[in-house]
Image (cartoon, rainbow, N blue to C red; front, top):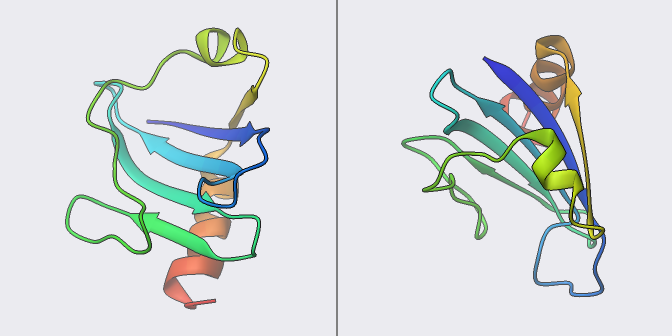
Length: 94
């Protein structure tokens, strides 16, 4: 597993400004959190979703590939960092 945190710089309130994903060995998303500029958070798993958030249907690009687009800044985070966000926004339902 790997965990990535991506900031998306844009002006639209329709799209998330931050995407945090748990990515499997096959490079497909397993769980995802999307943070929107209005403070709401969408979540997705293989059997659950909220807002407009869905798991990607393509492999997740490498950090380097994501960062080659100036609108994005991606970094690797730890499993603990991901789990803390998941607990706050999904388990505790905030």
